[in-house]
Length: 248
Ligand code: HPA
Image (cartoon, rainbow, N blue to C red; front, top):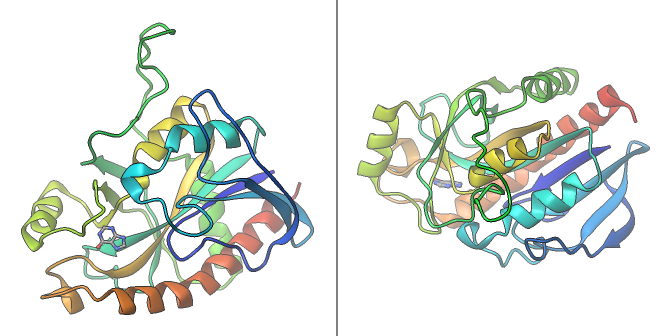
């Protein structure tokens, strides 16, 4: 079964025929909302809205540990997270979809590990390749089948939010090697890896990052929402092709 974590612009999945919702409790508290079970093109999937179904939970307050723990308890074949980002690289213009292959973590003060030393031996997971290469490959293949243009790879910079960045911060991230910036990629990816989940991200560019292109002086949220709404149609097409490729 495919698990999908929906981000900003995706609190619901229009192509999903919902069968039921399930409230889950975990040792780490409650996930962002009940898990939604249903079918896409007749294949079973589970969906969770990262920011809650009413989009009320800001990135720094998401219970990432509970979200991934709840999904992991269902033993999904893979977990695809949909996350909106600001484009730093010039070709990552608003509306573009990318499948990042690397991460730089600038977040702080989040609950970022299951191995916090209280009840388990010290464990250092390998994070050389933060995303599952097989799931990345499947997303790229699904985009090809859906005739959707997609960018293979890119460095995702995870920031604390909820504010957007200053132009100087984006310049620094670019010098660090970042191609896109978002607020939810970490600790989500690291927790998924700690749980052994096959996890990858569809990054949807909502705007140019601060100080870049059309965001040279300001980022207008109305524009961001309009871009996301349009791009989500492509995201749905890609996910439909992904479940077809994966089967049950
Ligand atoms: N910065 C951080 N997160 C984001 C952005 C951005 O510009 N756009 C969408 N999510």
